[in-house]
Each structure stands twice: as structure tokens, then as C-alpha cells.
Image (cartoon, rainbow, N blue to C red; front, side):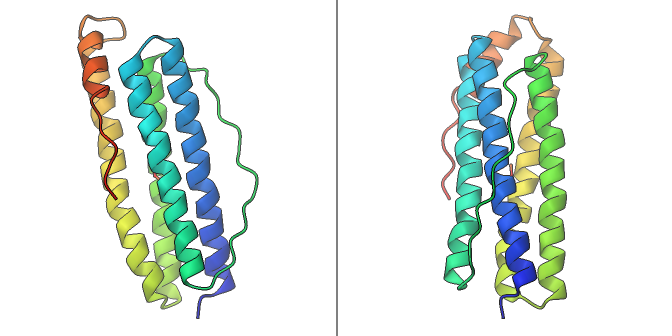
Length: 166
Ligand code: FEO
């Protein structure tokens, strides 16, 4: 039994993942404005990854015979104080997403919905990686300073990010 309560929560998570995608696209736009093509590329891939997270839930809803509801996606800014601020926001945002995923997993456990539990385990692992990527970037940016020569090297390194295989 795929409960309406769980379907509502998954629909809310689909919206949250699309909103994350939108937030990261706004960050990518800011990084383009800052002439940081490597960082902008990294953040654009993050946008694509979040879209994939949303679509994975969307596909799951259909596989289970659920009903997808697509609510409006919240706005996203492209104004930030610095590259470091972008990644600090990313880390804070990912921590928020982790708590949403954990709550969804707990709901699936409470309802004995095993397929949703299995799916949520994938997202739980993904969130470990998402938080690690953001906190590594924050640490490196704190190390080089906003306009230090290391920024150019870091920008090149971020530019080498490849799309993640599913
Ligand atoms: Fe879809 Fe960045 O979590």
C-alpha cells in the first residue's frame, strides 16, 4: 500500500529537489558573473544532479502507481557576497536537505513501506557525499582566501568535475 501521506511527502521532496536545482543554477549564474568558469561549471553540474534527484523520485512515483503533483518552484537568487559565501550556503542547504531525506525515511519505516525505505537509503548515502563536497569546498576556499592566487588553481580544479554516473 503506497499511502497518500507518503505520496504527498515524496511530491514535496520532488519540489525540494527542483528548488535545490534552481538554487544551484542561481549560484552558477553568480559564479559566471564573477568570471570563475570552473566554479560555475561545477555548480551547473550540481544543478543537473539535483534535477536527476527530482526525476528519480518522479519515476519511483510512477513505478508505484502514485500520483505526481508538481507545485510551483521557489525563487533562487543569483546575488552572493563571495565564492566562499556560495559554498557556505550550499553546505547549509545540503544539511537542510539531509533532514528532509531523514524524515522521509522515518515516515517510510513507520508505514512499513519497504520500497520507499530502499530508495531513501540511496538518498541518505548521496547526502553524505553532498555534504562532504560542500564542506571540502568551504575548507579549500577558506585556505586560499577570496582573491588569493590559489583561487585560479581551485577554479581550474573545480572545472574538471565530470557528471556523476547514476
Ligand atoms: Fe538532492 Fe543536494 O541533494
